[in-house]
Amino acid sequence: MSKPRLGVSDHAVLRYLQRRWGVNVAALRRRIAKEADGAQAFRDLPCRKVCKGGVAFVIEGDRVVTVLPRNKASGRKGRRR
Picture 1 (spheres, helix red, strand yellow):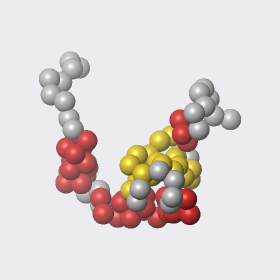
Picture 2: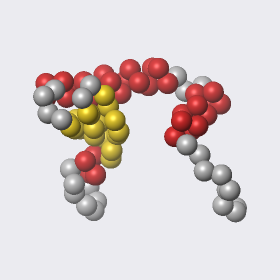
Picture 3: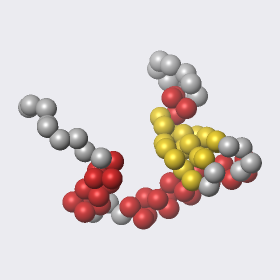
């Protein structure tokens, strides 16, 4: 297969999942927020990470800004044990 000529934004991917495959984005947001909620105890820190379910939620202020594989969040390299 040849390389596509167009790039695709994250926004387009999100809307594609929502409109083509019926992903409930609002429910997914609520689930992410609920799983990451443990970081509220450390609200005064500028950036926090909450590890749960094999991933790390990175939180800045009052918003989850990304989700990382757990081994990347700890700064470790290589295979997980």
